[in-house]
Image 1 (cartoon, rainbow, N blue to C red):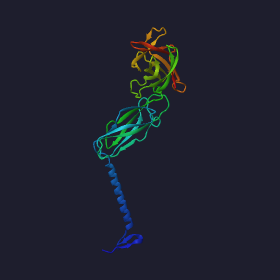
Image 2: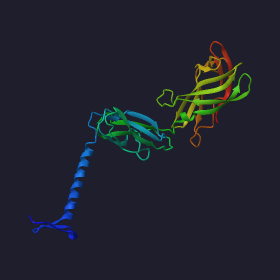
Image 3: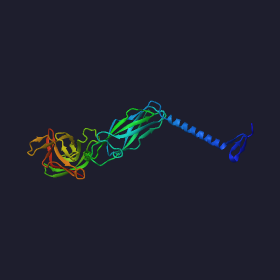
Image 4: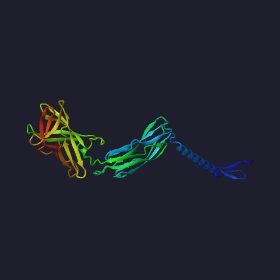
Length: 326
């Protein structure tokens, strides 16, 4: 064996028969270690996804929201214990008779969602797809879009689609009636004009059978029949998007609650004071030139509505009725 003589200035080793470049050996070793680290990291990433029996799926198949809601979370349920990560990829497309357009009617914040491993401690979790609606300020038919789970890692897909209806809020004039108005009219017993506050409310849930059909009016101290009566009654509502006109009607022969523990009804009496009718007392209204509610809604000034107590008779009547925006 011949001695090795190191030559520092060129970083080589002279064996008498060959010269070994130590610098190249050093870089080769570093390169091999780097490659090994990348391979190990890649294998580690592949193995990080869940391998237990876990499912992912939209919690609902159908959702309806208003187009002016802004941000809305669409939940994806994750069921089953996990020993690794779960990831899903979402796609969105306009569907139905009036498809919503991404970028114009809605946005999706992130279409790739992940849930990190939780060491097998939780059997249920939720991923939220963040949907942002875009209000167009136009009266139009409801729009529709569908979200689909395109792929999932670490889980099996169950409910893969959800259909989302974007309800047009610009035609939702029903809700625009909510709030305080002024009811103006004349009391028949005294011939005196009156102005009373009336608060209109209605259901917020669009699936409620009364939605877009029935408003509730509450008026403190509307009548004084020896005692002050705080009255509550229904207004029946219609609206036609084509003609941009609507109606507001008193419901007749329906019991409603007033203070002093009694139930009363509205009764409409014709001009001769004898003939009772069951048809509702209807006021027709039309949107103003700016597309808003009219400042005043008027009923037939001759239509006299009686405050009637079943079994007791009528206590008061009013006519020349107007509902005025505050």
